[in-house]
Length: 146
Figure (spheres, rainbow, N blue to C red):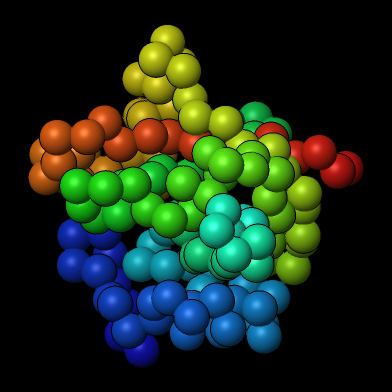
């Protein structure tokens, strides 16, 4: 696999392949995705009730984890975000660590500061926002387990 960056991402590790490699190696493969840290977010499908796992770039704000519902600037929210709206309880895996979390969308007051934080991890978020009329949410994942 070639090394990508946010300016020229390497898309050879995506979706289920990314999830599988991350799980099998406890993040040794997949944690560093194109120079940005990634985690696995497992939500409960709002229609199926089945677990759904997505690899996502993240940033930290103290003890909380931040993910962005950008979907590359698509006109609709990603499925994982809609699942969190229906049920904010989820799990994340960061390298070998597994945590229970509760999700919430960043408030209008805190979003500008958090947007700067997530853009430091992946500057393409600003580009993604220009591609869509929807406001791209920043999601705050607060661990509920030590």
